[in-house]
Length: 288
Image (cartoon, rainbow, N blue to C red; front, side):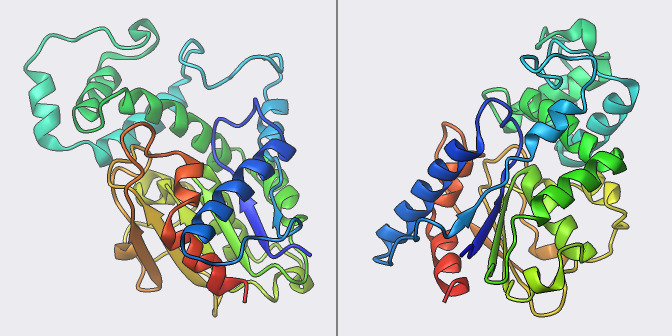
């Protein structure tokens, strides 16, 4: 019986449900093993592969193409959303430094307005190895979920079917954390499938960015809320470009932040997050 529902994040169109489940289960088992805790049973994790819904929503692109790739021009709506998100996470001192230098080539500047390129360059000063460019791609996918309500509803309905009467823990990574939170707060899971849910775990969540919360109709200053009785543990790496290096505990007294160090290679990696001790302890507690 499903005890854990996982909601994956961005850039997963090239994988499958089976591969994701194997990878996530292995990472969770690694974390549990390091704490001397029993590993998961073979049927403990259900991980719906929802990203295919986004791909099928792209009628002008073939399945082999990535609609969020840097070679695909941004729409004006995407430019406005991405620039707004960057303005909220870029440090003023970094932006001031960039304003003093000649505009440099980054990615495909002919597809980006100069002010967006400067914001990306400024963000790269804080998150090297292309953090700004990666954030642009991620925010495009986040925006698609936030501002395509029919598509978002299909994604939530698809994920909701993964729950069963024994599901006690929900784990969301990256955009998956937004989807998981949105699904739980809306109460769109059948009551007999959600009664046992005790804990939401978010990893590498862009809910730290005000533009993302506004897209969920969460007003500035309003707390992030879950149904009563559901605990929320947010795991973040200060070097994670998707989070702006920020946790969520300041947004609600009910959220517990757990800071981790995922290393320099890919601080946003789902598998690195899932191997951490805060995730393992929360899983162990939530599945008792």
